[in-house]
Amino acid sequence: MRRGSLMIGPGVFPNRQFQLLTPVRVVEPVCDVACCRYRRAVTIGRVLAATVDCAEPAALARFWLRLVGGEIDLRNVSHNWVALRDVPGIGNLGFQKVPEGKSTKNRVHLDIEVESIEEAAAEAVRAGATVRGTTIEEPTNFLLVMLDPEDNEFCLIRRKG
Image (cartoon, rainbow, N blue to C red; front, side):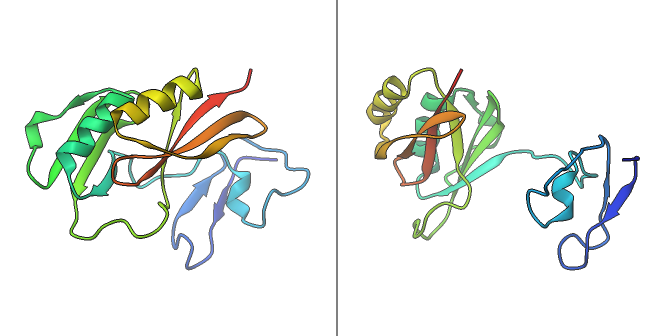
């Protein structure tokens, strides 16, 4: 396969050009979306932060600080916004006050890699989390779904081998 580019059809990423940086041999396509065969794409920017909508930004920031580390970014704290900076693996994690409560399952959640799911779950519960279900075994890891104090899902992950 040679280096080249692929145009994605209208309605998906109109006028975006994806570069084939590393040739990938696909024996059986994983899905019917052509861009799945490409490892990198020309981007429009970089992720600055993951942001969680919530009712109490300060309280939720303290909870997540205990789980994932970092430090509260004091440059931009208000009643409506608190952010953690220098969070390992994420960078910035923001908490934004919104008027409505959570009504359905999260479309995006954080996976937290841990050495022991049992010990991490116990610590998370002491910090205010709730266990949701039981530990699940997948091909490459074990996971446990948890809820933060505002019922946002996150997973504790212990990788195999």
